[in-house]
Length: 403
Image (cartoon, rainbow, N blue to C red; front, top):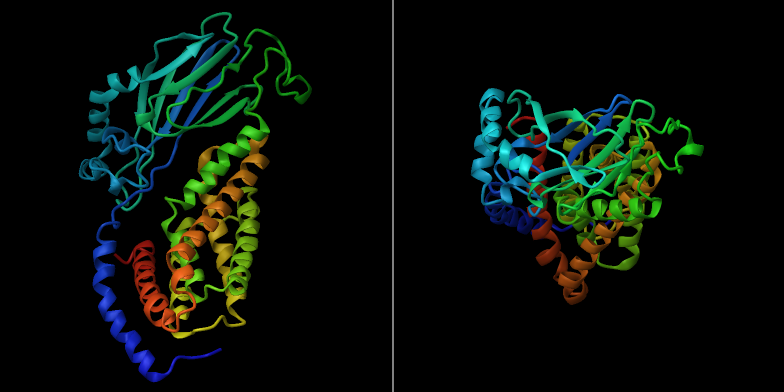
């Protein structure tokens, strides 16, 4: 381990002051952002032909027309409108939605045997205002009767409403169908077979006519590779900064591979354990610790020029934290038991591809051109690490509720 000399440490302190202004400008633009998450759309029905359609959605983002073309709400030109709606009590927000409900229904279709049927909103469940730093999910409740003799159904809404997880269940089988729909795509026809008399909960019958089939294993894998990649690039800014922090200490392949491998192994373990319910830790604990891990990596970058023996071990421990963060996100995407394994594998592959793309971008921007320069640590590693550490320190303070 090689510590920096006193003149270098004084230079670092001067850089901290210099780059604090940049930090303040940066976090002022992200402080109130809420990540855009997919809606969860649950269609349930019984043998009598009665159905319920429950849509869990960020109602404020829907009303402010903040779609998934943005990484978070702050990037939208309607961010001010979103923040105003986020502060409304349930009664006021419900009034806003009532004014929008006709547009909402016109841009959503529920078809039985290819024929669109009108739908009726029963009510909207809206939580109290609560912590304004957290997005608020409301539930839109729709109900009706399935036309007699219906064999299949499909669902779709306008792409401006964002991505959605569409799930179908019945009294006999709570996991008939599940798919992650992007860009306003229509679900494949889901065979519901109300009057078939077939026990669709029996795996041997699930391929027969009259029983719905799950989205194919391969298609689920592809879908969730995209979900995992999207969670890193562009939506996972904290994970991006952690990976950048790993890259900054050394652009040489061996030290970088040691750190990335440690991180990958660790987050793969806790991602799986978290999804299967073996480990469950509140995001209120995990998220501040993820921010703290970024701070630590960057502070070590500033005061050390070489990879210490302890660093891969610490990176492994930090990877365990990040894996729990990934697990909390993936559980919000409505994975059912039937597509659980393929979704989990796909998500993890997507995360890895996202991380590798971040490393590749860093190498092309800095490592290839400047990695072997004598001044690389002083002019690239130190300033970048200072800015990242300050951003993560702010996140830590914000996530523990001190501001």
